[in-house]
Length: 296
Image (cartoon, rainbow, N blue to C red; front, side, top):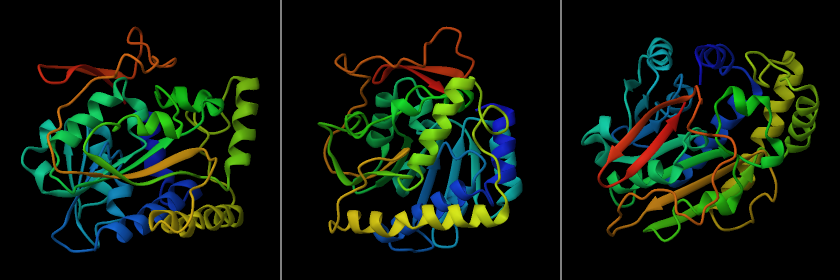
């Protein structure tokens, strides 16, 4: 993301219905799979301005890492109880990566040109039984100026997301669409955006803070999805069949795991060319993981 988007996040994520409801759903699901203990470490990869991991700081030992110094400065200012680092995971985490019981990857993978390389590097570095809480935007039909402003490389469907850990020692604990109740609204807004070639919100995004009564209504409407997703996690219900996002919880199993790049049978992304992409910040050239290009 760019400076304007980070500042917008810091300004509205306390109160905006989408951020508030997503944090509450995330916290509900995390507490379901990881008993709260003050010494249990949770690491937020690509933590941005810090609100997601801070929502867990009363129950776990929390740490956030992001490649943006601007985002980390805002996070440290707003959440002094949480440790934040500027750096690239897993390298910058050192031995802490083996101590983590849970990694958050909330709306991160869509920014990465080789998402296979990024996730497999993290899985390879993590200890067995470590959990990964993953959210990504869903549905190519929803692509709009909003995605371009945030430097997204793709929107996912369940098959494309699960392909990231297929054939690896990984157990899928949860896979479902979410932001399902508001999906018709989002689809309408995105359709209108494509016609106008512009976003409805600030800084090239679709984020704007509605009037307080509407904001509370949308928060309650969205956060209600948490009950069903918990039942999906417990194997009692099926996941949502459509939504503007996907949520997954996967568990690293015991066994060898080597980092890998995008397989040749996976189609290239339409939206993240390596040339002339202002969001692509660096490339990794490692003997074990080949080349990966990260977009923020």
